[in-house]
Image 1 (spheres, rainbow, N blue to C red):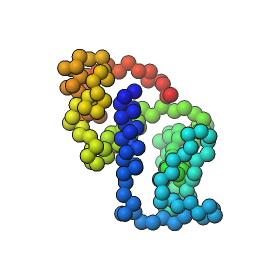
Image 2: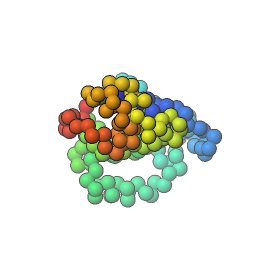
Image 3: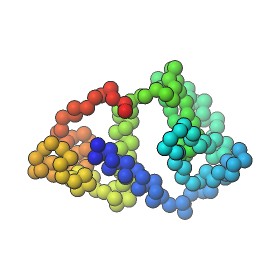
Image 4: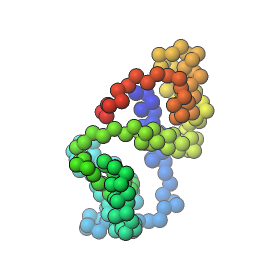
Length: 173
């Protein structure tokens, strides 16, 4: 749980610290609301409303959509989403799947964690060669303090901590 909290804090910190100076301005959407698509959007905590942006609004290559969808079907993808600054650009479901399905992430979750951790290191927010205890504090495992201090963030990312995983692999909550 502490690791999940740590990753969430890193994600929020990284996305909150990005620079707008090097981005090409994107026009507002064409639906008349005048929403600035260059600003970050965070959906409300309750409800199912989520702002969208179209490929046309973003000047993206709309001719690439069908080949992408064909590839996703070929690879037996169940759900696919592209977000730009927090807004949904593409959201597709396949093989009788819908937004109400609770699908496991498995390796995709590990990839996202490694990616955001890499960004955190790049921004100087952490060092993957430091002890995980530096960031989570003592007692995040059932190991002795001497054993726990030897587990580095790098070990977490490469799944080489030596700890036994006792979670429910089917759990998607």
